[in-house]
Length: 276
Image (cartoon, rainbow, N blue to C red; front, side, top):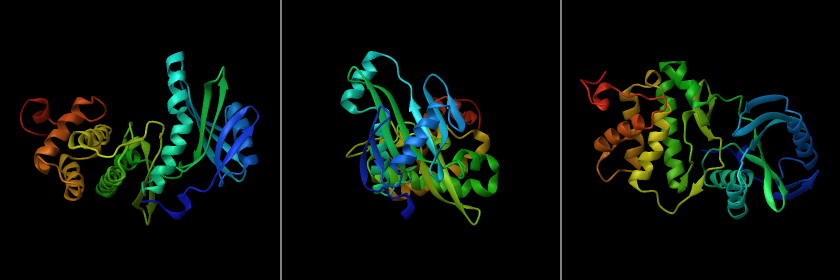
């Protein structure tokens, strides 16, 4: 599911301007330094700025990059980051591993941090800018012509994730960018990679949880029940469920509603009347 241009390159150590970390060879040191200075000034564009994270668009040499800073408070989280790595470091490693496993993701270009008293105080991930590609959520909201192919692409993304033993942690249609070719969806790439982890085996319950995250993030109006079923069956034909595809799909629908995200479900799932 990945293109040659997304393949990770060699990794180099980075130490400059009180930042330390690593960078992919595809991002020159001077370009990284320029992007970090721009981020400190608020970036060229601010995509998100709240208590959880600051995400900016910054110029790095001849291109724009996305700089994500996860904001954390509390000594316990900082101590945990000493062991597991700060968010940017985790995302950098996870993104590279996903791409090397054939799973589409925004190419991580650098991960840097600043420490205080030996603890990670700030953590920044620099990654490829995917804003030119719409999200799966945006394509599903556009209309019927793109809905079927987009749902199929999400099913293929889940197949690739599970074949790689990967768990995203925050798997939503809003976190999947889709490249179009001849106006048709052809490639899915994930963002928000700091919660990605890898397991040797993903059981049926875990796979349904991942499906429920994606399905729960898609409003009722943006995908019919039958379209969701068709995409799910595409997946189940390759990675079957022990209970069978039909019961597994009904369980998926229940779990999607239980998430209380964007999908509300028909009345039969909520316990009243015939399906809408």
